[in-house]
Each structure stands twice: as structure tokens, then as C-alpha cells.
Length: 105
Length: 122
Image (cartoon, rainbow over all chains, first blue to last red; front, side, top):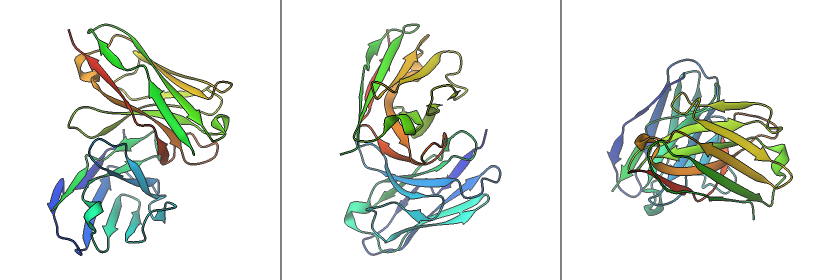
């Protein structure tokens, strides 16, 4: 099974900061990666699909990059509503999620 | 509004069974693969199972293989998860999720339900 390793597991940041989260796959998965945001008590929300495509309605400060085994989610200027937990997902072979990254103030 | 609504969660004893349902609305249910994803209390997301558009092909995580069955009724726009031989480690919120790509079995999950809680305890 393909494993996804996210880093860091948590980070502290301030409003306006540029934040980068990485996701590494145990084998090549081309661009079959999605990124989600989850707030406490809520279902996950799709941000990025196919590694770098922005889901409709998602603010442009979110961006994704990478292919093969290394992927990145970037928030260009952190906003108060962005404090949440972020997950990557691979769908090249069945589906797997990364362990999550909690973005805290 | 595109919506998924899960039901059927609750408290069950170890070794017991439970059937979850997920009612879909406002999209062509029969054209999209569907999945179940769970989240144990305070933990991350875990893919559980997926079913192709026709229902002919199903897929399971190793942790539930042989105990869980996924099915769908395209005439009722409803997804199901039959859970047997439940264990304490199956305790989680269970979300149903729609696959983004038309006809694709595995893809990003673009629509999620609100989840239903399953607690396995004596």
C-alpha cells in the first residue's frame, strides 16, 4: 500500500505568514494527490486536486505543486480562517491519507 | 445543493453489526464512484472502502477487509456500508464521500457528508 508522510505534523504561524506543508509518497503517484482542510467538528473540505488544480470556490492564496513522490501545499498569506488541520490524499492506487498537519496560531 | 447525508451510526457491542446509509441528492449519483472514510476520535482520516459507479467493483482497506461490505442502490441514490464483526478500533466518525471525476473509481473526494458516529463498546 502507498503511504503518505506529511510534515510537519503541526506548526505555529501568524496571520500574513507564508505556510508550506509537504507530503511525501512511498512510491511514485504522478499527480494523483489532493489536499483537504478540516476544522474541528466539520467534514474535510477539498482545496486542491490533481496536485495543483484549485477547487472551485477555494481562495487563490492556496496552491499545490509537485509530482512523483513529493508534493507541497502552500498558503501564501495565512488568514484567521485558515487555522485548521490539513491532509493530503493519494488516489493513484486505492486511496490513502497523510497523517495531517495542524496549523495553529 | 449537492448533499450527502449519513445515517445508521450508534453504539454497538464488540462482535456486533451495523449498517450505515448515505443518501445523495442534487447530482447524478449513478455516474460517480462513492467511498467511505472514517476518523477515530482525535485521529486522522482513514480511507475505508470505495465502490465503482455500477457497483460491480468494490475495494477495501486491509483493516476492514472481510468484515465490511459496501453497496449502492442507484435507483434510490443511496450508498451503504455493512459492518460486521465490529471491534473497538472501528470506533470513529464515518463519512461518505463523492469521487470528483465522472466515472473514475479513485479520485479526489469533492463532496463529503457530515458523518455518523459509530461507537464499539461493551
